[in-house]
Amino acid sequence: MGYRYITDDQLNRLVDFQGAREFHLHKDRAKRDKRMSLSEAVGQFVQDGDILAETGFSYVRAPLQSYMELIRQGKKDLVSIGSPMSNSSYLMSLGLVKAIHLSYIGVEMRGNDKNFARCIKTGMSEIVSIWSHGAMALGFKAAQLGTPFVASKQLLGSDMLKQNPYVKVIDNPLNRKEDPVCLIPALFPDVCIIHVQRADRFGNAVIEGPAVNDIALAAACRKVIITAERIVPEMTIRDASDASIPFWYVDAVVDLPYGALPGCMPGYYYWAREWWEWLVRICTPSQQAVEDFFQYWAHDCKDQYDFIDKLGGSRFMDHARRLMEAAQANIDDSGVSFAYQEVIPKRD
Amino acid sequence: MSNVAPANPLEMLAYNISLEIEDDQIVYVGTGLPMVGAMLAKLTHAPNITMVYESGGQDPMKGDMPWSVGCPFTYRKSPMSMEMSISFGQSAGGYVDIAFQGGAQIDMYGNVNTSVIGEYGEGLKAILPGSGGGNDIGSLTEKSVLVGLMTPDRFPEKVDFITTPGWLEGGDSRAKAGLMGGPTAVVTQVGVFDFEPVTKKMRIKGLNPGMTVEIAQMCAAFELLVPDEVKMVPAPSDEVLTILREQVDPRKVFTKMPGM
Image (cartoon, rainbow over all chains, first blue to last red; front, side):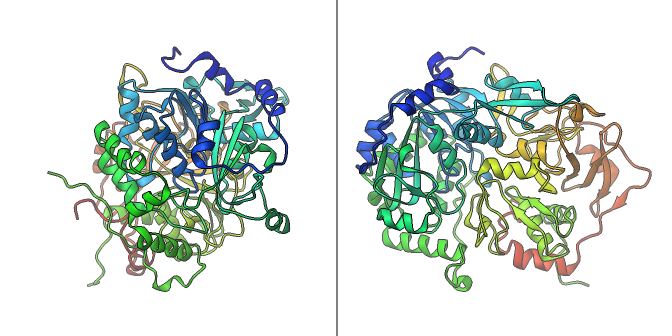
């Protein structure tokens, strides 16, 4: 395949086992206070041209307020990867992301993301490789396990094999019978931002609810930013012994309450569902509408609190908290309704 | 006369999905109608099924309809949740009995396309979201059930792109490719289909009330195999419809017909 945007270095760095190991060996490993502001963390650790891994589950415990900061800082020439990776859609149309390793971009039943399709069709950005969620997840997991590749039964027989320069089908050499397997290389993105429920100042981080790929990504990525709803005393984490990301992976720690808005955060708040429907159903058909949408929600917000004001302020926030507590059955949910007014475009 | 309105096509789809599920199974649930079908099964004939979701949710307590496969209702008071790679590993390791998948195109061998209409590059017509977990559950799970609204466009002879392999070119081509399990049924608004055991071509299994072989054939761009005896799927009972409407999808998120 010939590529338009991705450089050979970006293409090869993703699977550079030795290179990632070298990078990790030279990281500052002192257990020090790594707290800094979001703009400092993003400014220092997300560089133009980086391979950025999406974390969380696109709109569940995803670092969406940090993506707003990426937009505000005007990062560019990023390559994105993640399973899933639905936020890469708008990062493409806003010019941050030029190339993607595709697993899934969409918001499930909310509607087809026409923005993603337009970015590819018009050549604003390009698809470099195509994956299933599970195959990509195994690539991140292989990196965490410290193994150069894993052999899997995913992707076999599919046309994704023709659109993926990284994977290779071989006959399992350990089996006497014919046994095709797919070799999936360990994947090493440059940077990821992981939003967690709590972390200490050193970067020991606790995830509640599905970790998705984030434990693997914290180990795989060259640089890791942790943003947290709460920065807790180290002893809180030691007492519970429930951290799933150790401090030595972590370069920066950001105290960022509401950092997953407008997505949902287990233990804290439910989605701004209408926001997603507005984005996917109303704005994605037009480049101008997407730009205007993020002018309003990213550039015209200096931080998450401006964003909350636009969502509806304390009334919105309290409702989102109540819905999440009811969904998790932490309050009596019999009096809590999940009904809402869906955003449905009017047809002429 | 019953005072419960008969099932609309989407409700019939959800009902047929539920019938594919047997009690005690571990069920891998995707977004949309499969959620509805699985919840209906749990509230009717299969109370002891365990639902698992690709974001990592496992065995949630009963609750409202999830907004997404990452919704807190997919891990409501779950004993644990799993990382994504491990969640799919359950299918490969033989700890999932049945999974459901939708697609923009489903062909005569049950191959599914959720990637692209036309082809990448010059021949591009439309870009779809991509595999997500579809390829994984379809490649690894013992039984997968395909779900779709049936039209000749959506049921072509050959999909434009194999995102999730079904029986590939039929016969033993799937096993030769190294894959496990395979699609056992296709559920549409017309009825339920299976795959003829030797050729692996799609075959009519049962038709929904009011449907005929001719209607089914008009909805596919390839020739459907017709068994000697075509069964009719019985209409869901009033009791099942009431559970579907009042408990499973009371806000009609997935079972309301567009424009109605």
